[in-house]
Length: 388
Ligand code: PLP
Image (cartoon, rainbow, N blue to C red; front, side, top):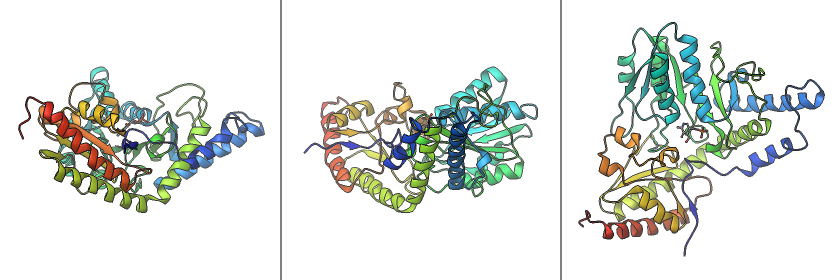
């Protein structure tokens, strides 16, 4: 029987009931502008600040280190461009990895092209890990920032952020981490991780889309990316998205409360899915590591088939998945992440990411284990390059 299985939680998630109910009053009854001085506006400001405090508590941060943004992309842009502007007089070298999200890579390309920065792109190993020793070796007297993601959106690798943070701190270099895929899924603590800046996004953990956070460790002050009416203590202008902030905070609190149990549940489902596919499908391989991997993210490559064709066939069978990151699937080039872990082009083309989440069950995994091998076999039967 055909089943609907949403297996693309790394792309986005459904708003949880808790987040929705927390948000609803702010669209009509409590629509006040937090900048208004009368009580109705100040009540909205108080609720916005309560959301800020909740987010801070979930990250081990202080409320005045939390700035709401329009999402993960803006938080990443602001972190990099803000540090470039604030510290560019001290040095113009930045360190990152080759497998970051495009919100990081394209911003750094911009800084190289238009602002005269030099960027070192560190390679990763075959499972996607950045080696902390490589980070240390890349630091120069003019290095002002290290930006390494907490967890990769395509292959689920959880980077050694604590070690990299310690190296950055010892060298007196600022450390930013794009934690968009990590927050709400694995424990995150800005002090344990030694981070100065951290980006997160509401829609990756059942919060609303179009709202994110940049954490900025005090006393660091970033110049604004968005100029205007001076909201968010002059750092990020624009009338505040109170409903979004309240929904993000409610979703984060909810995710944090179930982190261990849900993490263990998803890890078991993910491993059963990956192992089942490995044994049922010849010439396929897991991408990313076995350990230190995001709980819900399964990713594989299948030889002699196109990822896009697999996705379309799976969609017809009710399974929603992705080939690499959703943002890059408009392009026909293989994903930079899969090339970054050393896969040849022809293998990287056959990639599928199945990212499990809150609504997925064991029956969903059973269904995927039945359908996916059939889909791959069907595609291979039509392929002129496939030899069994
Ligand atoms: N960084 C990572 C690692 C992501 O996975 C994403 C979204 O896919 C982003 C940044 C961008 O976040 P947003 O969609 O909130 O702009």
